[in-house]
Amino acid sequence: MKKLLLLVSVTALAVGLLASPLSAQGWPNHKMHHPQLPDLIGWDVNATSSYPPPGQGITLADDWMCMKSGPVEDIHFWGSWKDRDGNPATDDSLTSMPWFTLRIWSNNPGPPSRPDVMLWEWMGEIPGVPSEPPTLEGWYDPSVIEYLLVNNDHIPYWRYDFLLPPGTTPFMQDSGSVYWLSITAHLWDLSYQWGWKNSRDHFMDDAVWADPAGSWQPIVEPPRYNIFNGWFDRFGELAADSGSTNFYGDGWYYYPSGWYNIWFYNNPFSLTNTKNITLYVNATAWGVDSSLTFALNYSTPLWSQEGVPGRPPLPGDFPGPPAPPEEDYIVRDTLDVLIGFPEIFTITLPYNPEWVSIDVIGRDVVVDGWIEHECVTTSLDLAFVITSGEEDIPTLNEWGMLILALLLLAAGTIAVVRRRKTVPAEN
Image 1 (cartoon, one colour):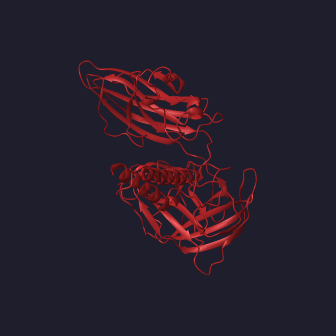
Image 2: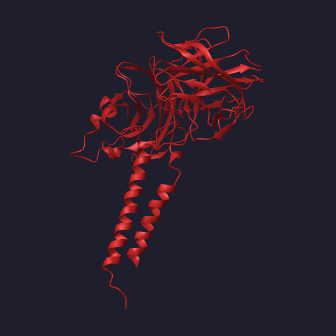
């Protein structure tokens, strides 16, 4: 009976998998090259203009390639409000439903490519769905000379879902064609500012910005900025971290080689872009037997080609032979940091690694500082998804779950049938 109950449970699991809303996992019904999802430790780029439209301010635009001909019925995008009260954790929003202007443009291939002729326009309020990830995001205004850049500006962000209102004529896109989506947020109180969130998912050229009287200008990725802090006790172990920002995962990781690493995302790997790094380090003695070895670390090209996507090389990747040594995936440049003598280092790398890290071996010492790292002329893209109103089509992962469910269902059915054949008939 226990075996039969187990088989029934497995069968029920399979049925549950088949009945579950698998389409909630991602954007299986997108109609563009790929969804450009938000970078939660990136930037919100100012797209604010005065009300009523057209207003005075900034418009942003980014391009996409149509992958399925038909109407553009749904547009999803992400944005945040610039901090105005000095507390990044509060959401300084003027309204949950800003008045937006959405436009679709033809493509001028350039170079560089940019919007050409306006093909479709809609104006109105779009409701936002708030979210509060445990990360600090930056604010970026490309229209200001030398650009206005505020690191660690705010935490909350919003997703906006434009669903084509009944009676509104949709834009008809053609498969294989490139178009541009532009967004402007119109506000009657310009002490508030709204920004369109950037994306790590790059496509073709840079996103662009324009003021009402100006031409389209490309937007490049600004430098990323991170704060690090670590207190290492007399045993050389990490005792506390009281201020690091936007680090990967759990923060400090201990490696077989004896180093503590704290990783920061650094833009997509590129062999053609150089990396400029400015690093400030302040080491303070916290006992009578203080010592410190300090290094700047970054991931190798081999890690970006062979490693696990979406994360840096972690201690579990180096369990010992025959696993690769740390040097295959991590480059460590030891720097001459003296306890009690703060110092700034300027470093240029010949390529752009995906991850950078601060590495410490120390006892009775507090190490704190900041790192600014810039991938020179890296493209900045904006977060949006063009979808259809059709039934969702499973992704490859979802097809895998469906097949697993069918196999489990088949296995349960076969096993139950076999059990019925082998159990003697009761008199």
